[in-house]
Image (cartoon, rainbow, N blue to C red):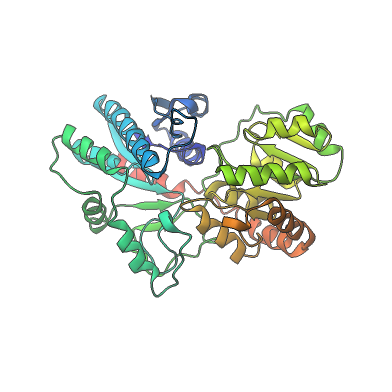
Length: 406
């Protein structure tokens, strides 16, 4: 069976799709992934066909070189989502797909499935349905507790979203009646849409107010390149002294304030540091004996070898830190990052998250010293990590696909 998987977003959104696709391919299915052209090598190496789109996730700078404001960023997101939706439509017109799998920011995949009269399912790396157990992910910094979280989530569902225009475009092109994003969500949930979460219940116990159609399948770990070998300079750096601190802020450019705080910390600390991302090159030139600028390195290989991880608290890096048994120093900046940072801290595997004015060179130094100096963080992370080898996390989606194919 041909399976269409929609994966707009950053690398952290594409990697779970690749893990799911690899399981489906192992069962004899064919997987087509609609993702940004930047991920062509990753997608094709996993044995999938790529349908690319071109608009970048990061908005362009303004004419004066400054970043766009909130309004400009939202306008760019609308363009980004529309470009992906058009690519998804182009893929669908080729025909022959048996099911569609969407991620959190591609709900129009269900509209495509509706027009094709085929089943669809959601594959989410973070919880989406309003619940007493967590706040809405778009505002996860505002945890109002069990009494108010679900009502807050239902209120936020009503807010306009950048994907609204893409939904309207897809439904219009396919001749479907107009329907708002929220109406579509509620209609599909009432109909029993399968919603799979790439989350381990060891990290997030299943909320008691979830319907039976929602499941926690376990983390969808990145697909490893069997031919990958560690670069010699990095191996030599790791062997040359005490375990370093890893700083990794994801595949999207870091907030200017966070980037400055991290740079100042790396320049002033006496600790050895590995930095991933754009800021790493300049730092490494300034302190070659103490700071190493690394390209993308599999976290399953690198994280067990570092003393602590300073990270943006996305779902993927938070899970990877737990799996490696490495204490975290979370610097959440937006959306679900606050949720994951808070969850890791509640589990005892990460220090108190650094946010707002506390995110400074000195604040970062204090948190790193705490993460390394208090052995309880590493012990607790290791205890949780030992429970994350919880079988094939793609199995529930594979069973669903097999049932659809039958």
